[in-house]
Every structure is written in C-alpha cells, then in structure tokens.
Length: 424
Image (cartoon, rainbow, N blue to C red; front, side, top):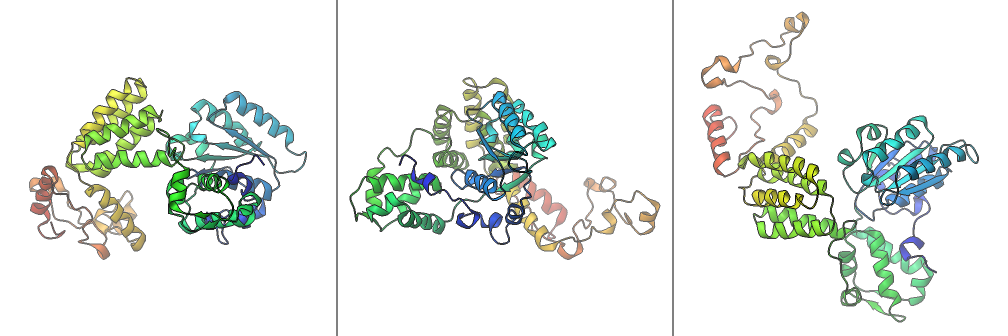
C-alpha cells in the first residue's frame, strides 16, 4: 500500500472528524449547514495539518456535490479557468447542487488568479472553499473575501493527537500488525509541532522500521528521525518555530539573533511581505510609544521591500530588524487595547455620556445631547477635566505607560492633568 498513514486514516465523515468541534460539533457553526446541504463559499484559516483539506472533502461528500481541487503552488489562471469550465459542465449531471472547488494555499494566488474566481463564485457555477495558513484579510482580495465566510480552524489539542495515534494502532492494518506499545508521546508531539499529518507520518516511519511488539519511546523516535528539519520548512511547523524565534529575538533586544533568524527565512524563500508584516505588528505590539518612530520605520520598510523585492530587500529588512531590536520596548498600547476589548465584552452597550454625544438635529439638542460639553481648546493648556467614560466604568485605567523615557514623559503629562483620577 503506497498511501501514507495520514492519507489512509483521513476521516470520511463528520462523525470521524476529531477536531474543530466549534465548527462541526453538535452546536458547531458549520454542522447544520453541511447536514442541510446549504454550503456557502468559504475560507478555512489555520496552521498546517489541522484538517482543512479533510473538512473540505467531507463537506463535498456529505452534501453530495462534485469536488474539484487545485493547489495554488502549482496552478495558474489557465488551470482555474479549465476547472471552472469542468465544474460548469458537471453541474446538473449528477446533482442540482453546484460543484465545490477547493483551492489549497489560496493565499499564494496572485490578484489576477483570485480575480479569475470572482465570476464563477458570483454566478454560482462553483462553491469555493479556500484553505490558507495566512490571515485572509491580508492575502485574499477584498472582492473575493466579501463573498466568502471565513472559518478559523484551531490547532489540535494534545489529547486529540494522542487519540489519533491510538486510532492508527487500532484501525490501520499496517500499524496494527506491528502490535507496538505506545509508551511515550512527547517526541512525536514535539517533532510534529501539532501537525496531525506530520505526526502520523513520523509515527509510521518509526513503527514500520521496527519489529513486532516494540515499545515506542522518546529516545526511539528521536533516533529514527535523525534528519530532523530542513534549513527552513515554510509550509510546516519549522516556519512557525523560526518566526517565533525571530520575533522573540527582536522583543528581547538581541539584534544578532534577530538577523540570524531573518537570514534563515530569507534563505528558505519566505514571502517578503510576510516578514515585513510581522515587523509592522511588532513595532506597535512590542515597542509602541517607547519609540513611535519604530512604526514609521517598519511601515516604510514594508513599502520599500515590496517595491524592490529580493535580493536587495534583505538590506532594508536587516536595517529595520536591527533598528527594532535596539529600540526601547513597551507593550503598554498592546495591553491597553486588549484590556479595553475585554471590558467592552463585559460591559456590553453602556450609554455615551450626554455631554459628548453628537447632536446634529434639533430634537437631539432638545434631549440634551452635547449639553455642558466643554471645548478643551478654550481652557488653559488645551485641557479641561471632563468625564469621557460611561458612568458605570468611570476612573477605569486602561493605558498604563511603560517605564522608559518617552512613556515616562507621557505618564507625567497625564499625571499633571488627571491628578489621581486614573492612578498615574
């Protein structure tokens, strides 16, 4: 049997599908739609090996629709048009439901390739299901994104992955014949990085290289997987590990490590926009108001590298990375918006205080909208101590400036104006 274990164990029905219960569980957002055969065009967003392709196949099977598939890595506009023509011809042959076109790694499609899908999706010739490991807000054109539902697929839980291994030992003939005993799982889980497909294929490699009744231990797994990882696997967990190391090196103010991990990504052929985008996020999340120029530098770098491209873009990226790594750090702005959003979820729809409401009509003015509003520029230092928060949460401090030169100046600015109101 030439099929790898991950393919042999691929679930065929929703009941066999282990993960993504928030989507396909009893109360999942997708389950009823699938059962009723009401399938919108959609984008699955999640890390590698969490079941995006499998779920697309299950949807096609359970809704009894023709299924076409393309990979964005190897397909062009011509391929898209050919598949759409086949889908149009197949419509109505076996079912009145329109066919499903599944596109793996849709984020790798260019704008023109994505444009070629619009007409078919709009006219209902196909139901599009795209899979991506990247944020579709950045990688999928807005016209196509607006016609699709976006569903986030979560990483497997540890228990799910262990259950998957046990299922392989029980249900797969090749694995079952070995009658192995699963003693330790840490090495398997670590090497697979949460990717179920990689987990099963590593497990198969180890099991099939051993005799019957072997105990699967961490040492055995590590000894069998000597090749470990390539320089940079931009489609697997190595991608996420190196990006994590890259970001944490900059956050930790280590320009040497940051440039090393940058080089690893460049040599591995990482998308230049992906790197530049991560630097933009970091400039606000980890530096913020400690050095506001960091965001300007990161944004200018993003524009420059997308214009210039490799190989010269490596120089611009290096300048940006070393600048960010050697900047003072603060996550105060990042923490402020997180706390504010948590507060909004808890407090619901608190009313806007009357003095700061908009009053474009006479009725609103009669109702007191805008009454007693004091225009800050009419007061000394362009400031007046007014209440801008809803009454129920007044005096709540959300922004707490960090301990650095710039934010200490901000703290002093706030302290002079608000005294003790916000605890500055």
